[in-house]
Length: 555
Image 1: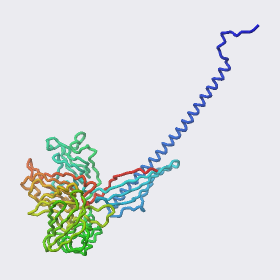
Image 2: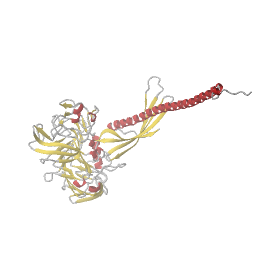
Image 3: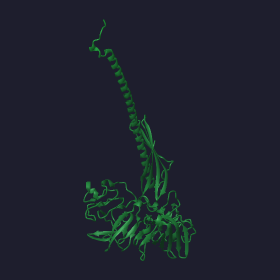
Image 4: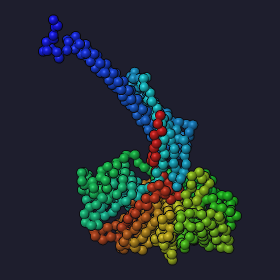
């Protein structure tokens, strides 16, 4: 008999086979999980190592950046002390001290690789390397930065004292606005709640403000929304910094004199006979009308028969016709005035200072190749172009020709340091030529810059500097000669517009508002933003430096 299976058990697997398959499946899953876990542990280890490496690299980068700032501070200190700046062979190095037995080490090395002048400013190339190590990880990072000196002409308004030449406090009100940076030695007097021209208050300052003292506020210290009536952008744009900025040192003034006389800034100025000189040193002391020099390598040096008190005065009138500027310079010398005729190739169209210069004095005449216009360029060491130095006082304009029109790139400078304090007087408008105004830049630098005119709505196109370090508030100002301790005459002369910048030791009075009546001028400063990066020639600097470019060079 054949045996038959029970059909009820035909589809049920045997227990031994079931257990074997389950074991294989579990082992397989365990292998997969182990592979994934191993990969995750490897990735986690990589991530942790990457984090440690990134942290080490960032610490090295921070050290390198600190090296750049340390070199900037060293350059500023050396310039302030009139010392040479560090050369490439004199790097700065510093290692941060670590507490106790910490294995961590952080340090930097910084070098000043190059220095060059451009547009009247100095530029510095700095490279710094930062290092980090903790005994396990180590990293290094290199950075490079370009640093630029800050010209005084880069301020719309700069003053050491907030009083005028009579000791009276000067107030900032909503009636005026400053459209460029402002610096004050303070304490500033700021009446920010006063009515503006349209009635309601408005921001007095449209750019950054820096002051060395806490201001006197009216009606009280601003807070919240009231900062909008003080400075555009709010409180963040108003800084109280106890580290003061300074007026130019005497050596900077003498440097301009040397550039005008010999063109190399070495200070070897002779005492010539009264007259007007171009290439004075190389021509053996002959004046510009009788020299045999062929090319302009200096500025213009004017001697007015000076004595130990520097009381002589040169009167300068200037007119422009097309690309020809004619300066007539009168002074206490025989033979009448000097006529300096500058024939530009195309300054009005391109700002190009090339051309010829002819100087006429009496029956003598001499023509130079080139013009005394412009600022020294990169790598140029023997060009004093743009320096017009008068060893005495300067009058712009006279009774018959009070207005002055200038074309070119010049700084008119008089001695301004202890014992030698001469002035510049402006007898009317001092304007750029309309056709070349986009390229014209004029600097005026004296102990006092004075306005002496009965005209109304006068314009002065220039960057003005008045004063030297250490003066009291009685000197170093831009002022109206008609102002005294109680007023500014009986004439309302409208608006005095300065197209440029104003740097002064004390804030000279040009007008006064008594009740609703104005006497003298209301002053408006229309800041020339070009002066922040390309000021008039030989415009002195504040001693501060700013980083204008920064590059991470990696490991």
